[in-house]
Image 1 (cartoon, rainbow, N blue to C red):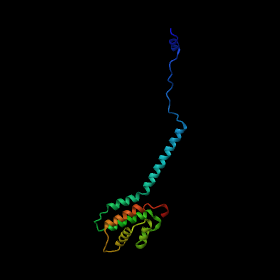
Image 2: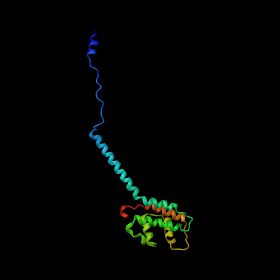
Image 3: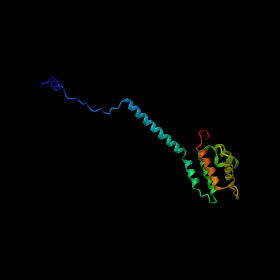
Length: 159
């Protein structure tokens, strides 16, 4: 018999060993899992808070879009939507008692408006107290829509 064949016969079979187990995980994987879970929880919490803070704004914008602009009460409804949203977001300002120039000053102080938008909001406010209305409901709706989008929700120092 050849010495090489004899040496090969004396060798033991190759041992594959046990399959590598995923458990228990190394501490680095546990840290990664914990950080991922905390990030997911924080992102969920932030998303929920963001949506809750803007819920009334979304509802006001939807209500504003649903107002039929051809109706005679369209301007009153547009103003009612604006006032209701403001009362919700500024509970400490006593907005339900404000009217006229004080109401307009409040609106103008919350968001920088161009002259056309300021004039439209002024005409909208004045239209509540006049029989002869000189304002287009569509332009009033657009001005209120712009104001709601830009001014709400307020920054925390404004509340």
